[in-house]
Image 1 (cartoon, helix red, strand yellow):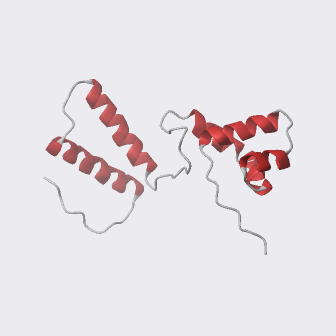
Image 2: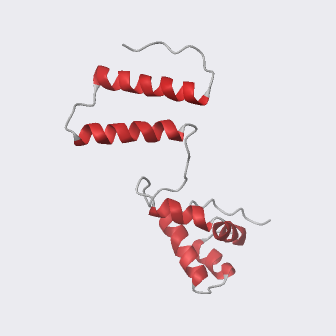
Image 3: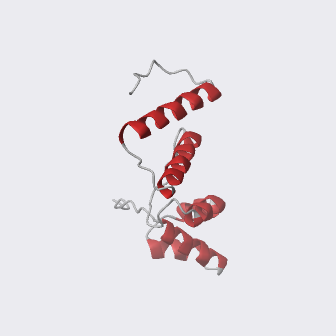
Length: 125
């Protein structure tokens, strides 16, 4: 009976190393055995090369990250992150009631702009 292969999670550094090996004309079979993964995993990395490179060069992700999860409301999060950075660079406090109000206002504006219908949200004052 064949033994099951243990799951291997590759971080972004390992994925970039695999893509560099592909560029250096190393066989996919050799790369797969070196990293302990299946050849189909190497093929998927080559297929998704642009996304892997974009994630690797993104300043918001850690290169040690193994799984990239995207948000359902990326636009809202980007807007809140931008507000947070601007507020902190202006040396203004980002805590308590001020941040709650801003987050609630941005959430409301986002929901109105995207016409998303959600149950009534309790107002945070």
